[in-house]
Image 1 (spheres, rainbow, N blue to C red):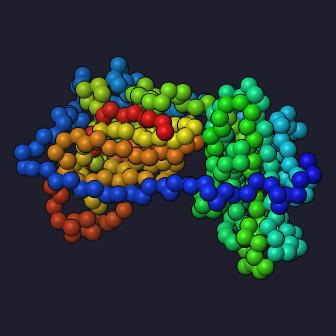
Image 2 (image 1 turned 120 degrees about the vertical axis):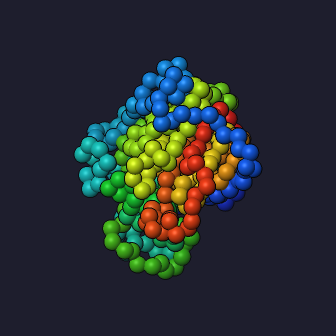
Image 3 (image 1 turned 45 degrees about the horizontal axis):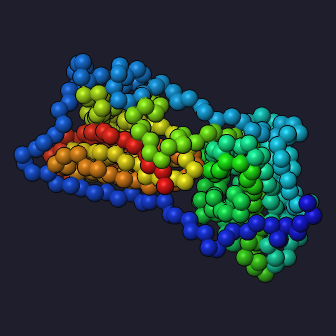
Length: 374
C-alpha cells in the first residue's frame, strides 16, 4: 500500500460522539409512614444469605471470579498471521520499549524525530486489521501506552469501516494512566469483513507551530483480544449473567431470592464499598435498566454505578418505594459496578459528625436488572 498517510482515514466531523453521563445525585423524600423492603441482613436466614459464591437458586448468578470470555488475537511476540496492513511511511513496528505482557509490543511511526522534523502538516501513522468474511462479530480490546496524547500536538483514535468508534476525546483523558501507564480500550466490530484502523496523528490541525514535547514521545499497543458479544438478543435479563459480589469489601445480601441489599453498617471502617460487578460486550451500546430503593444520606453514604471504573450515576436520599431507573451504556466492553458507598468522600469522623444526626438507614436495595441494546 503506497497511499500517502495524509490521505488515510481521518476523524469524521459529522460523527456524533455521546459524552459520558455525569453523576446526578437525586435525593427523594419519603413520608413518615415508611414502606421499606423487609430484610434481615444481620442474621442469616433461609430468605437472606451471603452471596459471595453460590446463590442457592436465587435470581443472581454470583461467582467468585468472572470467566474471561476473550481470546488473544495478537501479542506481537512473533510474525503475525492476521491481515495487518499499513502505509510505508511512518509505519508501525515491533518494539520492546514498553510491553503490557510478554516481551514485545507494537509502536506507531510517530516518534520524537517527527516532532523535530515535521512541518505544519498533519502526519498519520495508521495500522489496519481486516477481518475475513466468516468473522462472527464481537468486541476487540487492546492495551495502549502513551506518554502524551494532548491536543493540539497528538491524537489517537480507532475507526471501523471509516466510522470513528473510539474517539480522541476518550483516549486523551487517560494518557499515561491505567496500570504502569497501560490503558485498556475497546471497539465493537460487526460481522463479516471489516477494516479496523488504529490512527496515531501528529499535528492533526496542521498548525505551523506547536508546543514543545514534554518527555517521551510515542504510542505502543499490545495484547489485542477478541470477545463475543454478550448477547445477540436485543433485551438481556441480567439475573443469570455472571457477577462478583463483595470481592474487595462488604457483600450484598440476597433477600427473597430476586432482591439484594447492601448496608453501611456491614462496613467496619469509616469508609468502604459493597460492589456487584459484571461485564457487558455490546455492539451498539444500550440502556441498563434496574429498580432501586435507597435510605442514604450524602455525604455519609449513597448508591453509585461505575462504567469502566468511572462514576456515571450517583443516587442518595429516602425513597418511598422502588424506583425504575435507566442508565446509558456505551458500546464495546463495559465493566459495570453497582456500588453502595459508605463515606465516598473519605471525610473525617469529626467532619461527618458536625453535619448532624443521620435519619436514614444507610441501605440500598436492588432488583430487576436488565440491559436493552440500542
